Length: 281
Ligand SMILES: [Zn+2]
Image (cartoon, rainbow, N blue to C red):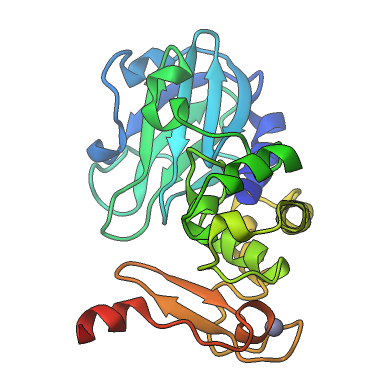
């Protein structure tokens, strides 16, 4: 799932290409993608793009009086075409979810490979109409140490759960929380209120700043590949920790897994596998 650094890099790529251009038409190829009915997606035709921005993990393409909100879910992303592909859109076949054609001749596709269609697009007059945006907490890079301390001191949840909760801190997902907890040498299962806010704040900035630096300037197709290269532990089960040389371990859940270094993060202790726990109980 694209998180704060990837969407920031996408915004950086799109801003100079989209702002000032006009939509000639927008086509929905996957009906489940579009979550709103009024205004119609056809209302975009003829409108000038005035803004491209990120909110949490969502991409916002702004027009005068309307916003197109794109949420990518786990597999969704954008494809950029300098020249729009010719021919009609085929409904409900393949990864294409939406194509926006521009007056310059370029086009942007929202794609979602795979059979699960969880990406979401909303066309709204006000961003508060999108519940997931209305409930967003402060951004991971704008949260101060004091604000983070206040959030942590109230919580008996696991730190990994708190960092992924968009209502508390927005912009992070499974990948960058694994990386931040590794950088902070914290167990993903540590109780939030026992965590040192200053150390966690430093790790959040270190990890996200490094990722943004690596990704900004790349085209959309390059952002996803480059993202994986930058990870120390996430998605690297069985590989070697770049800090201490220990073998990276994982905890599997029903639909995802987290990775951590037992030596750096849990005092050498292996966290039990949640999926196996459930099967053995
Ligand atoms: Zn390590």
